[in-house]
Amino acid sequence: MQSTVRFGSGLLLMALVGLPAAHAQPSLDDQLRQPVNREAINQQRDVADQLLRLGQRQADQGDYQSAIQAWTRAVELYNQIGDVASMEQAYGNIGSAHAAVGDYVGAETAVRRQLAIARDNQSFSTQIFAWNTLGTLRLQEGDVESATQAYEEALNIAYSVENFEGIGLSLSNLGLLASAQGDYVAAVDYYELASEYRVRAGNIVGRANTNNNLGDAYLAQGLQGKAIGAYRLALSYGRDTDDITAQLHAIDGLIDVYSQRNDWSQVRYYLDERIARTLNTDNDWGKLITHKRLGEFYEATGELTLAQDQYQRAYELARLLDQTTLEVELFNRLVSFDSREGSKN
Image (tube, rainbow, N blue to C red; front, side, top):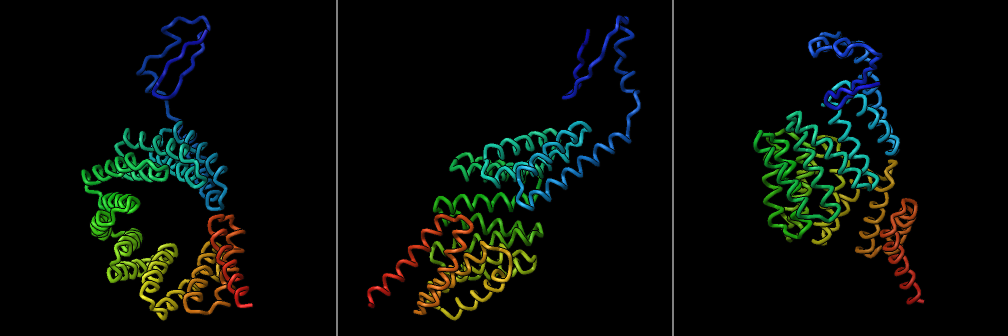
């Protein structure tokens, strides 16, 4: 016969082989005096840590399913030894991997588990970032109301513990949400305040992202001068941190502003910066957009043969990357060139 004694999330199974109950079930004091096998715990933690690193390498290679499996096993081991901080990290990684493959349900499940652990452990920083992640997932699913609630929850927690990094992130995300709804005035307010807190937090990467978003909001309102200032700041921060993504966002913003002004010398200047950061790399997406941008530049300046060549290169990359929307757009542009040639003949 077996009896089961439950301790937290674990189970203690005891075989009772005809012994008196007093001998079969040691007292709580006896159990607490049992020596802890530190060596076994350390070995288990080492294995879990290795799985955590393995999952990261697999995710970096784009093998998200294998990464999820490694991190899930790591969670199980961390749970057995009671390492809640590492469990929080692993669940955050699992959520990111699910989101990367478009599995927002799986991502939300993982982040909610991370959030539950963070609440029990009073880990306010993790709670702030988990709520922000939930807000982003909800926004991607089109649930604006839930996204707003999640970002505001994150902001409230961040204010309550004076976490400047969390305040800056939450305000920036609320700005993104306002922009998505077309409320650029509110977006600017959020971004400008977020930028102040990101300065106080010393987060240069965050400053680059917020200034890029601020530039987008200014440009959407036709405030070209302010947009240029925001993008230039973002580009400077991106250079300081070697953040290519932030640099390209800023460069594209500046190209848009100067294209609207028909200032083609400045457009060409920033196109050259984009070329330097993409064409001699393995960043196929970056190359695609660079060729498309060059095509638009040459078309606008009347160099149609060069424009057609750049659109063709962009089209081939769009097909390679299975970017259907861009593929159709670029195909139509190429067809328009054929139509022009036909009308001349």
